[in-house]
Amino acid sequence: MTTIFIYPDRCIACGLCNIYNPEIFNYHDTGIIKFTTTSQNQLIIEKKHTEKVLFISHKCPAHAIILKEA
Image (cartoon, rainbow, N blue to C red; front, side, top):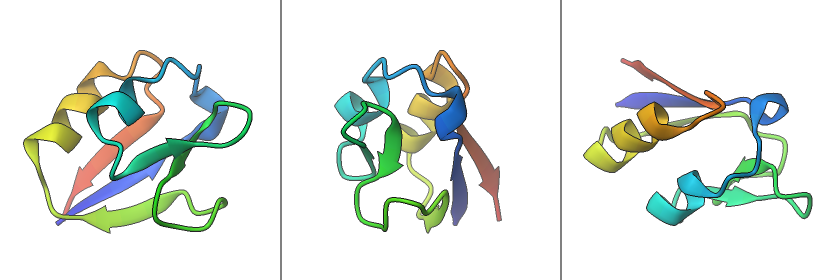
């Protein structure tokens, strides 16, 4: 399992996370990152490790998505 941390204060609303992982990442009305399947204030989730999650954590230009392996 992978722990995914999001940091909305770092988000620049570029859209990459939602383009590559819409099942995990979405946006508030302001365009700032949030998780798709959780409450708007949740900043940490556990997910199965996938290449798509790893890819977007490396591609996020603002480093708003951080992964930690369990």
